[in-house]
Amino acid sequence: MIKTNRSLEDAKKYILALRGKDLDVQVNLGRNKCAYYQGKLTAIYPALFTVMPKGEFLGKTSFSYSELLSGGVKVRKSKIEAK
Image (tube, rainbow, N blue to C red; front, side, top):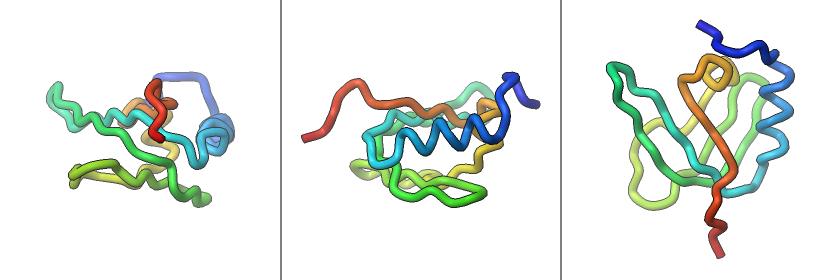
């Protein structure tokens, strides 16, 4: 279920503005479980975008824009910039 009134184009513009930046990613795994990791937005495609995780994270790293709109994944610019 879509939680916001944002459109698919808004989600694509938001992700495009984050290209190449360090991100904090929260992935909803269901049943009140979430995975958190930091990574860098590496590729943007028409239907999805990919995040390269830092460290040993082995979870999901590619996401569709609909997951962003529905709240299944939350992406924001990292407060701590890597050097």
